[in-house]
Image 1: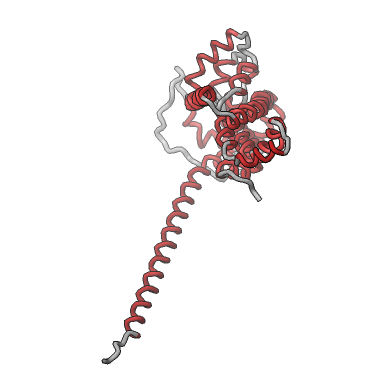
Image 2: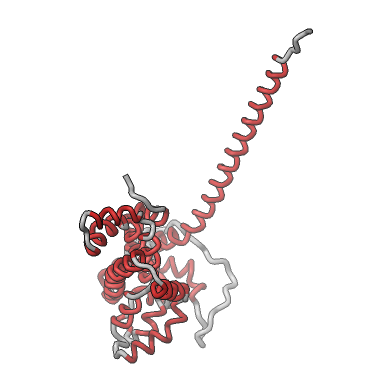
Length: 317
């Protein structure tokens, strides 16, 4: 019998496989390029307000009023004016001016006072919320039972509630404790916020029980396990919680407006929410200064933030 000539068929098959591989590679590269372009467009859109704020902070007051004055204009009765003309969004000032920063930093100390009010309000909240959250999370992760489950479920319910829902109860409790119109009315609800407890509890539960059991065999007590095992392993989660809590309370507006009647104790975020027509230029400079701590905290802890969110448990090498 004659042997079939399979060399030609094998050649055609190999060419077909190579063609399909090239086609798949092309479509994969095409999808990557399209996804990158879409991500770049969204990145530009999200960064535009920040870039616009920073560049406009170096404009003179007259130039800012000429570009955006119609946006903040009001009628004699206090109503808004209909904008019949297009607003001129400028990213590059005609002439760089530091007058806004000179006014904010040297001529008007009230803005720096409000900035330090923000620091005084947010700093203790971040510090003590993390201390309480690490201790509570250790208890939730180490012990089990119906009572533990009920309390942790209550934490989740409270975390899902927006602050506006609990604002009236916080006001009534602050009034009952006689701490209304003081920093304690802001500190206490923030320090005992359930968010950090939830985040750290989920993280601590991923620590292998074999590690804790080995420490117990070596004679370690609960405090030593908490301090020498859980805290070092949860460093990324603690940094993540610190960054998220800081950004959340750094931008708070409702709490100071409701719980602090004295405008001298309000943080800088309240000023930014009440921009007047004559303070448009100052608002750009103040907003730029106000963004600096958040950006520094995020850039410094970006590695910890990603690590704390994506870590799935286990011991790192």
